[in-house]
Structure formats: structure tokens, C-alpha cells
Length: 400
Image 1 (cartoon, rainbow, N blue to C red):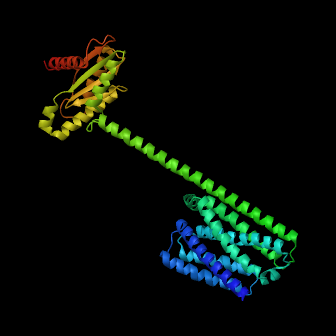
Image 2 (image 1 turned 90 degrees about the vertical axis):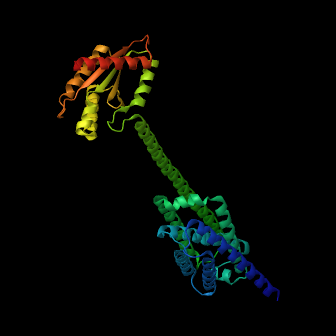
Image 3 (image 1 turned 90 degrees about the horizontal axis):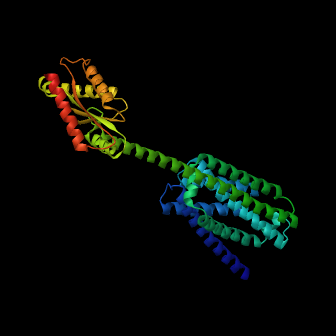
């Protein structure tokens, strides 16, 4: 009677730990792989499927190797059925569970062999202590999963699952370890156990845990580093794009939309900076002749083409110096470290180039030039006013 109560109590503990393990495993996997089913349906299927699987593996008289192979195939089938994911991701996650199942059983089996001096697998499985071992295996699986969840960041594992190279490395390493565990089970299945054998199996189990977690940690660390690197490159690209957008925005603020040269705002700010500096400079103020008549006679489209052509000529002649459209038909060219005579020569060249434009009317410039020395005897308004007066004087002289 006492033995019956013992087995009933042990079975109840095993069932409870088994259910808790399934709940924990299902929740953990759902954080890595998107479930195909609703949570309740997935859990009910998992409990039913794994209970039937455990009962079959325990009570069917199959060789140990065949049981392990069936268990692995069943795990792959279950993960493929319940969760969404690529085959490599399914293989990796199911392989992690398979490794812990096989290696924890190997670890506890070696300890039980040393503790109770069991001589063979058959003797071990026929002993009532084997049921205690299986319950302990379930409990340790639950505790290992609990610790694994706390000490590994799921986001890091998700990065590993997305990193094809590191996932291949981690999966290959794990499958080699699982294959070794399977071969180990085959090798020692029919042999008589000794304390030395048990010690070897125990040390092997510990070393396999070390090899597994070392390769796993390396793969996760490399995936995280590569994830940060990819994120850094993405941020760098976005930052570069932002700088480009800022530059384009700045250009749009300082560029005249019609002609493509600098606008009045740029010209005024540039002139103000030149006044603050100590170096001498020259200002050339230009006006397109007869723009109003062109607009009235040929239309504003022709007038716009006149403006654009004039701006192109000014940029070509005053290469290296900022050309600014001040508004309407007026342009300003700022020439640092340039004498009035040099500016005069460039302005005459611009006037000559205007004559070559293929228009039915006679395009031309009028200009006024003012130089500013290091003494800074004139302010901005005085410079522009004087340049404007000289430009109109030139225009009057040309028309007269």
C-alpha cells in the first residue's frame, strides 16, 4: 500500500512538473517564433501531443536510440505544426530542447549509476528509482528553462535567428553535440556499467554543457554585434540622408528658384560677412536691359528665358564668385580680393557674351562697380546705393 501511494504521489509530481514545463516551453517559444494557433489551442495540442509521446516512449519496448530519434522527429513535427518560422529556425529551437532533454538525462543517469551501483541499462530501467530519475529530469528541465529564460535576452536570440550565418553556426554546433549524445547512447546501451563508466558519462555531460553554451553564447554575441553594426550603418545612412536634406533645404533657402543662382538673402548675408572681415572686396551690381519690354512684347515665358540665359552668362564669366539675383532684373556679384579694374573687365566680358544670345531682341547688361578697402569706410546700404547709382549712370550713358 505504501509503495502504491509512493508511485501515485510520484506520478502526480511528475505530471505537475510536466504541465509546468510545457507551459513554460510554449510561452518561451512563442516569444521567439510566431505561433500559428491561438494560445489556448496551441497549449491543449502541446499537452495532448507530448503526453501521448511521453507515454509511448516510456511504455513501448523500443531501443533507446530509436526512442531518441522518434522524440527528435516528434519535436520537429510539433514545432513545425504549431509555430511559424523558417526550417533553420525550427531546427535550432527544437534542437535546443532536444539537447537539454538528452544531456540532463545523461547527467542524472551517471549520478544514479554511481550512487546506486547499477550495472546495466535494463537493471536501471527496471528499478523503481528510474521513475524518480525521470521526475528529476522533468524538474531539472523546468529549472533549466527558467534559468535559460532569465539569463538570456530573447531579443538577442531573435537577432541570432535573423542572422543566417550565425544561426547556421549555432545550429551546426548543436546538431553535432546532439549527434554525439545519440552515438554515446548507442555505444553504452548494451554495456555493463562501472563507476569509471559513470564518471566518464558525468564528465562528458558537463563538458557538453560547456561546449553548447560556449558556442551558443558566441553565436548570440556575434549576432548582437552584427545587429548593432547593421543598426549603426542604418543610422549612419539616415544621418547622412538627414544632412543631405538639410543641405538641400539650406540650398533652397539661398537659391533663386527660376535662375538657379543665389538669391537676395544669400547675397545680403554674404555681403555682411565680407564687411566683417578685413580683406578688401568689390561689388558688381548688374541690371538686365529692357526686360519689361520683352515681357510685354514676347510674354513672360520669353522674359524668364532672358533671365535664365543672363544668369548662366554671369556664372560663366564670374566663375568662382557668388552671383545673386536680387529681384526682378537685378543681379549682384561679390568679388573678394578683387580690384575695381578686374571687376570692370569681367563685367565687360559679360556684356559682350550677352550679344551672342540667339534672341530677336538685343540683350544687354548695365552695371555699376564699387570697391571697399580695408578701412571699411562704407556700410552695406551705402555700398549698394552707390553701386545702383553707378549702374543707372552706365545705363543712361549707353542709351544716350
